[in-house]
Image 1 (cartoon, rainbow, N blue to C red):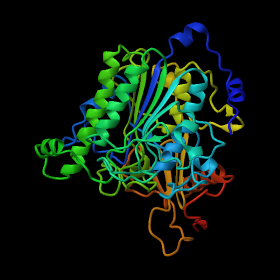
Image 2 (image 1 turned 60 degrees about the vertical axis):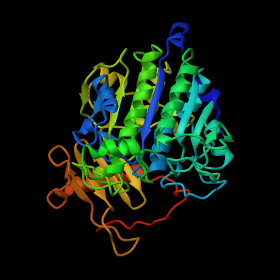
Image 3 (image 1 turned 45 degrees about the horizontal axis):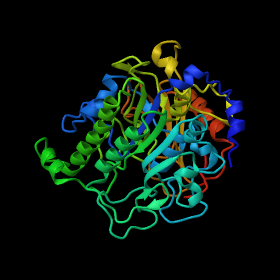
Image 4 (image 1 turned 120 degrees about the vertical axis):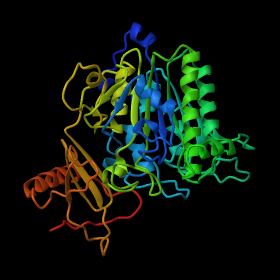
Length: 450
């Protein structure tokens, strides 16, 4: 499956005793389907999210933060492996039916695999969405503890007769009966319990909320609070209030346990907001390769190391979380160095954020979701496949945008800059040429646009 000892040797894992004793805790918090303009951090006045906003006040806000997938499961596969998920066929959402074959390929190594091997307690909480068979379970993918559910969505209320896909699990065992008030609060409380229990040892926590993904379930108390702000989208705003409250529980527990300064805490949304969400100022929604499909709220704090209140402009991507976490843990990595024969696509962001390294972490970023694709090179972006066509083999001509002056992707420059269109198209073709066919989902053959 994964020869971790060989991986560690390849990575030259040099941890002297002082570093090992002072390694930070690492927490990655993932929200689900939130619109970009559904955080007060982006200026949304009717979506107050002060606890999430505090991560930027105490750390770094990424103005050009991306994920590698335009929908839930591929995005999570990229985040946890540090590799474009297209490299291993995880291009589409895993179908919501039990399968022994569909899941994050066992050939891939996760953040949890490596951190567990180097002495971290590795804890996964919440939504998994990376496979339903036992071999894909979080505790088979590097996590020492799990509390959550495997399916991509489920009720926020206890389910009397859950399926094996949406049941709540404690490690590998179903929780019977399910006893909690509201899923978002429950996941926050579970995170607090794990932090308190394992405060003496370094831990990595992957806290994946299903908020604010459908179904639209909200507590009455949050609904009443949301009504005071606006009569529109009341349930959605109530769900956002609960999400922010749960993030606050984690922050408060870190403070209570004197872990706040020495914890690397990352918050990222899993993809662009769904079609009923507000992604202002971006065009498009979840599933598209316009900015609204994969440009997300992304913030990071590590008070002992990173500057506070920094706004970082160059593009970054959730693939960077893997090498950044490795560096924080004292795992020596080299940009672009192979991992067990596989290329890491992420970059350690810490030297860029502290000023030790200048320039952009990435000159170019890429996306592919079937016939929808995009490449961003500097501030130029070529995007294709988002408009409806007559057949699945037909593709509309690519659109070219300058994101420095047109973040809403309204002024197509393709007609006036054909050389840039061809240059970026060639970059995309070179990037995607050797990808395997997707392991599941639509097998769309795309003919090149004229």
